[in-house]
Length: 163
Image 1: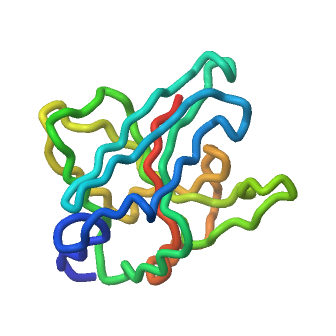
Image 2: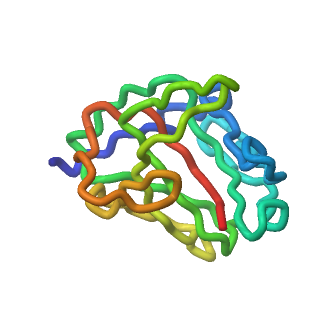
């Protein structure tokens, strides 16, 4: 793997709000809501995380739409550059190498995600997430002996706040 920097969003590749959609606990009867405000060089993830409606649980997330088909096999991980107006919330960055099918009601079926939990630096800064630090999960629970993450075909990325 090389140390080259490959922008996925931001930098020379402008952020595009059309590439993102909300995926909140409202699909399960919750009332959390997330937004992603984009500017060509940056994005702001914000919203309301409700932990009462579903009895102590809840999630608010934004995910990419379609198939990104990213080849990140020549990278060591993902670097996030975070602004100074950060929350003390724990966030999760998810990557998927498969896109789940649709249920009869139109919602996405559950599938394996590769997760990395982090807290934003109080005054902003960068977080580097190495691929070997991502955990394979299914519906938030760790998967034992998962197939390796296919770094040559990353299909979806999401950013989540949850409890």
